[in-house]
Image 1 (cartoon, rainbow, N blue to C red):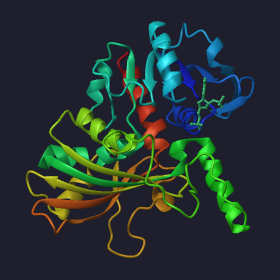
Image 2: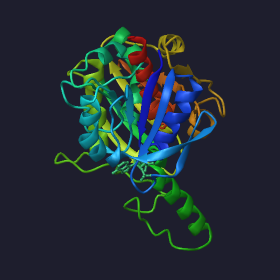
Image 3: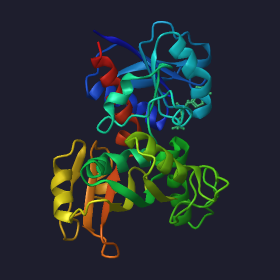
Length: 336
Ligand code: A2P
C-alpha cells in the first residue's frame, strides 16, 4: 500500500529534512504534498530529486491525506492538526501543542513504539529534540538499572530555533569578524561567540519551558512519574547538533563498562568513547547530518555511590525531529 503524505511546514529546517528522510528511507509515498504559509506558496521544495510546488495550508482541503507530518509551530498545529485528523489523516506533530495531553501519545520510536497505536484523537506527538536524544540513550539504562534522578545541562544548536536562527548565527558571525554590530533579532542577546541560558519562555518556577519539557516528557515517555529531572538548557553557537552533559543516579549501581556494553547493543545508539583526543562525539564530527544518538565520556560519577556521567550528542533536526517523525510514520504504515 502507498500513502498520501502531507508535510506541513515543508519550507522550514525540519520540514525540508522530513521530505529528505521520507525519500532516503523509501517511505511508501503514493502522493506527497508540501504545505506552508501563503508567504512561500507557489515556490518549490525538493522531494526525491524532483521539485514539488508548495501549497498554502490555509486554503488546503485535507481530504484524502493518510499521514500528515506537522512542523510549523504550535499555533499552526493547534488550528490545523484536528482538521487533518477529522478528515481521516494520522497526524504526527513535532510541536509542543499536544505533547502533554493524556489522549495524545508521545513517542520515541526506539523507546515506546507501542504507544503510537493508541491515538484516540488521531494525533501522535513527537518529543522535544533534547528529550528525544537523551531518552534514546537513557531508556535502556532505565530498564536495566532503574534511573531515579537525571541531572542534565544541554548545549543546543541554533537550528532548533528554525531557519531564521541559522541565518542569525551566520550573519552575526560575519558581522562581528568585520567589526560590525551583532544586532540581535531572533535571539534575545548575541548568539555568535556567546552562550544563552534561555530557551523558550520562562515559567513561574524560574525554569524555562525548554527545561520543563525535559521533566514532563521524560516521565510521560518512560511512563514513570517518580523520575526526578534537574535540567538546564543552553543555546550555543553551533549550527546543527545538540549535546548534553548528563549525570544519572540509578537504583542498582551501573559501572561504566556495563553501561558501555548495554549501549553498544541498544537501537539508535552509537558509543564513541575512547579516552584520547577526538575519541568522543561532537556535533560537527559525528552528529551533524547523521541519524544516531552518539554517547561518549561514559564514566563514574565519583561524587555519588550510584552515579554515572555521559555525554550525549545527536542531530536535533534529524533524530531530534524529522527522523523520529518519519520513524513514527513507518510504525503507522506497518499497521496496514
Ligand atoms: P513559510 O516558509 O511559508 O514561512 P522554521 O522553523 O525553519 O522557521 O520553519 C517554519 C515552517 O512553518 C515553515 O515551513 C513556514 O512556512 C511554516 N509556517 C509558519 N507559519 C505558518 C502558517 N501560519 N501556516 C502554514 N505554515 C506556516
